[in-house]
Length: 120
Image (cartoon, rainbow, N blue to C red; front, side):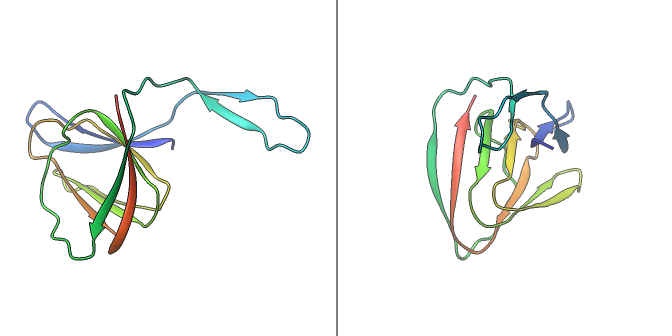
């Protein structure tokens, strides 16, 4: 799995989908680990976000725009409105595309968390 995708169907129900991208193996230099590189994905900008997840009450929300969300530290639990839930470790990447409908829940590991947003 390269990233998790959250999307909404025509009825506004959100769903989770694992996405695997094609990769090209880049030749490694001596002493450098082999690189598996995907095709480029055009992003608009980068936002560095600090999430104050000390006391949180997750609520349903839609994505504000199509974007990759990279959880840099701490775990996160994503729940789609269809009931499917995933517990993701630090370093996980999620493509949020549920711009309409009921949305999804996001619960961060308690504490101060760092997140990178990459709008498409």
